[in-house]
Length: 112
Image (cartoon, rainbow, N blue to C red; front, side, top):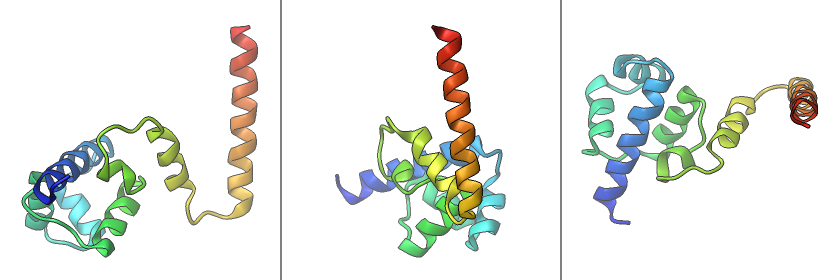
């Protein structure tokens, strides 16, 4: 994929996840530590971003980098869960794992 096409893809995905998080460009720019105009240029595909900014953006949106870099996300929800659990205590991750097991057990038993 060429640089310009990748920038447009990243910009489109950035806009999608920003709006899903009910954030304005100003909100995201403030959380990431960039200017609002730079954020707008990223969304329009006019600018690229450094790895540092990429990490800050994905942290602010609670997503993984692949959510911005790729068109189709078959495991998008799983990637988002992983991103949400990043930098949380092991005890919390274990509790979430147990909760998922319980939900899965309940969901499967209801369908059978």
